[in-house]
Image (tube, rainbow, N blue to C red; front, side):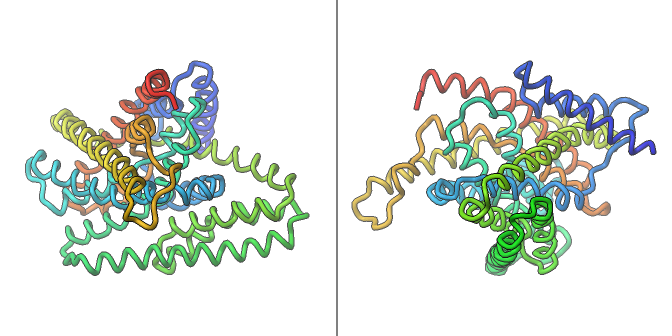
Length: 413
């Protein structure tokens, strides 16, 4: 009964602060995380430890499905070179970059442990970035790239994480085997998502006059698809993304407008609650993690986390501007048969916003907390991961709206 009351308290705080954030023009994630930290330090409040299975099953499928469902398919395909660069190439570059920084920065850090930390913090969280930039008038292209990146990068980071953990536990790492496994995970996830989408399309075509049943099937589909893909040992994340994109295109052609509008209203409430709960839980997790760390190590760990945050941001900025230059060269080349379209090119304003939007979030926390209890330096890795998440959301989150307004004045579209 006590936990039930605590859940209701969290929901009430989250809904109230979301309304306050909109009126006060304060980024909602910053306000909710702050509230979670304050609640977590109250002695009478139950200590919260996130369950990774809950994050990956309850939170991830609907959030991924909603983003994939609403993403403009044409813009997604048009910006696929940039999206794949950020979601795959940059994830592995960031994993290696953070590993190098951690190895030479943190005393006693081994290479396998450094790569585990790098993999945990390699993927960005577009939920945080888009929650902060909501209402700031970002171009559709920018939001499409950020959403598209978040749809795929979690799968890339989980692959890197699994191989890094395997190295710590004594498994030999072979590059070509890792590449084959990554390809199988992606291709298998695509196939599961495609088949699930076809099945759901048939169901919706036959039941589209029954609103309650149709929306219920759409609600269950991401969870079922994710579980099926994971049971087949392929990427549940990619499966849900493919399902969402497929059903999004199908709904535009077949479903009646009233059914789409009713389903959209239903999903907006679900996504609003899940997004708010994510940021509250991130805040609540920090006091719990602090309680398991020697207080003498807190300041050094915070220093390591700050340096890692800067390294990750520098790598992201460098890669996005290299992508901008590469697209421009390819577009101007007279030798290439297949050139990027003019709409796929990046300008400086877009590159700066995308680069600064590289905040970490709930997936990084879930991966960190999912480490086995006997894992070497588990407490340190979790604490640094939580600290990096907070640094990115508070540091980049508070300055991102300011950056966008400055760029609008100096570099208008």
